[in-house]
Every structure is written in C-alpha cells, then in structure tokens.
Length: 203
Image 1 (cartoon, one colour):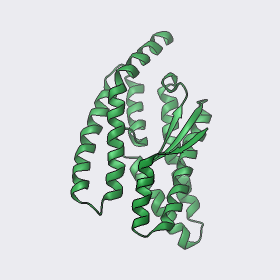
Image 2 (cartoon, rainbow, N blue to C red):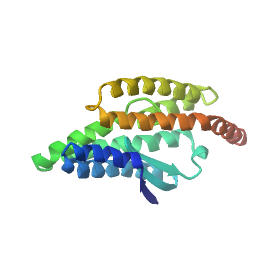
Image 3 (cartoon, helix red, strand yellow):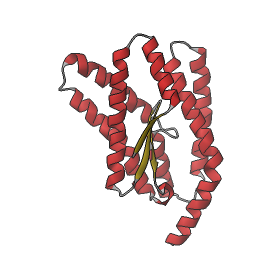
C-alpha cells in the first residue's frame, strides 16, 4: 500500500507550526495514522484491497480497488473502522502520562468530531449515505447528499473566512472538503451508470 501526503495537509501543519505548537505536529500525524489503520483493518475484514492511503486535512483517504463493486454493507464497515480506531486511541490515551494523554485525547476527539459530521466525504457522511442507499439503492440520495454537502460547506467556508485568522485550520479543512464534493459531483453520472450495471448482473 502506498502512503502519500496531500499538499493542503502540509499547509495545515505549517499553520500549526507558525502558531508555535510544534509538538502538536507529531500528535496529529500519529492520531491520523491510527485512524487510517482502523479503516485499513476494516477493509481487510470485508475482503477489500487498499492500494493507496493519502493523508489529507480532515484525516485520510483510502483508494480501494474495485470500490464500486463492494456492497453498501462492506462500505459502511470500512467507513466505521476509522472512528472505532480513534475511540480506541482515546481509551488507550487515558493510561498514558498526563502531559501526553491530554494532548492526544484533545486531538483525537477533534478528529473524531470532524469525521462524524454527516456530510460527504467524511466518515459520518459516508456511513449515513451508504445506510440510506442500502435501504433504497435506486434513489437519488447520493446526488442529494452531494448537493446538501456542497451548500452546507459553502456557508461554512464563508463564515470561517470571515473569522480569519483564528479559523485558518478549519477553513483549510472545509475548502478541501468542498473541492472533494465538487470532484465527486462531476463523477456522479459515471458512478451511477456503473452501479446500475453491477445491480443488473446481481439480479
């Protein structure tokens, strides 16, 4: 599996370093890798093959081979893997020395809170979207979800930019999510067509 780092994540870390909290840099890296390890283990459990892991501002993105051929149940399990690992990380942190545990718990709670927001492409958004699609696979819920996420992120970005510089880190994360939603929106028709072909083969 290939591991890469997105340029915007480096920008996020730079903003942290500029504020003089370099120790936070290492804590964030370790917490994100632990979170992605949860996704990796979950993917292995459902028989999915991970080809690449990219560390991004809100956590990580895993490239799954033949992802669209996986069932919604499998995709839900993979999405849940990250938050479960982060919860485990928080529990383990409770037994570490106070100086280290306080920072680890703070960072991991932040990662957990961000990733459980029910918007695409965060873990919370994927879990909710795939759960609805599992119930109604032929609905246009995916397009609706992308649209709702786009408008919510747009409003969020406007507010965060207005509150700069205190909200720089959150603004970077929101801008990245916004660009991902736009990218997935452009790709949605190909995804829908492929899923219809797969569903016909299964019926």
